[in-house]
Length: 209
Image (cartoon, rainbow, N blue to C red; front, side, top):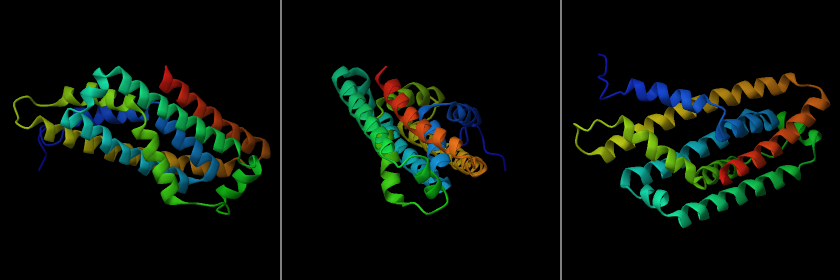
């Protein structure tokens, strides 16, 4: 039995996949962490990032997101908090022991704390008010006005977006891990080390712009 467009919005799914695969902050961070430390790190962070989407979906579905959109002071406060957190992560990355530590962590010898990485992904997503504004602009465009309870529709669309985002992030993590294992040269590992720092600082700057 083929689901109707109302039960399964194919257009929304296609648009969501296209947007997720664009080189945005989240997918770039998943890629750099998977390159540096392996797929387990990337998947843990991806799970956190996707979990954070529950927060933004809830804000949009309940109408609370409008306060962030209209309240400039609240939006600015969250934005600066997110930028500071990202710069803190960049500082932590700079404290690594360079390419030698990257080689150890990617071969499984480095420390791995799932919950620490999972919480990092959640914090990165929640402290990015632009995600709320994006959902405010994106999700309502796919609501069927002929159906009751638009808030339930938004929640349903948010769930579909989260599932496809997680699947893409996991695939990207595994591909980045495979690529990192091909980069045997010390020079390549050093490039990955600095790439992590640059990506984090770049995301922070994009958040402030």
